[in-house]
Length: 233
Image (cartoon, rainbow, N blue to C red):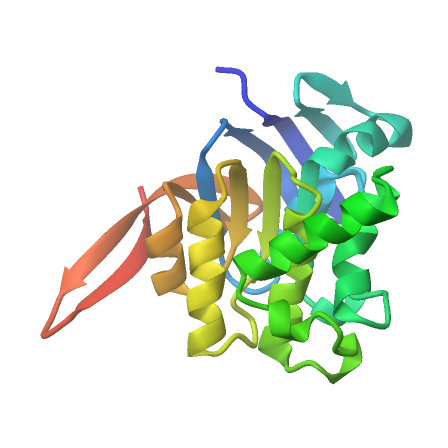
């Protein structure tokens, strides 16, 4: 089955150790794949490999039907992929919120007035219009997370890569985050330790263990109330 993103026999070594070993993955249109695993298991490394930020020693990455081996090939595909970094401060680059959210569309060639309209629409979707003129460095952790997501949505990507999207996000901002992601009609890969979030958002799951991806499923244990979990198949 062909997909928007395909990786075949991907192996990445670091300091003489296989971080990823023969990883296989296909992401289909509209699919929301959760990748879970222990700290240090290579989840962030895998996301970075998908967009060419960390080249593997072996294997192949195919994005939107095009095999990507060189930087130029990855660069051509990146406008269609929104990557939410684990640390929001690594992603916010402009002084004000509206400038930061408009930066992506501008970088893709949108006219300034169109970029601003797209930024305003993305902020409105996340109920963040009141933050438009705020300085990004004065936002709370949860607000920074949502502003980073707004910046990605303003670029209108086909795929979202989300690295621990609920980090530092409180209950109210978490509600906004979930609503925006559920409304997103593209595909996504989300890396998260938040079982409840994964169970609500993901359509399928995989566990990264010992350098390999293993199919998993979402399972709910009945107690006095329900706890969603991810279990390897």
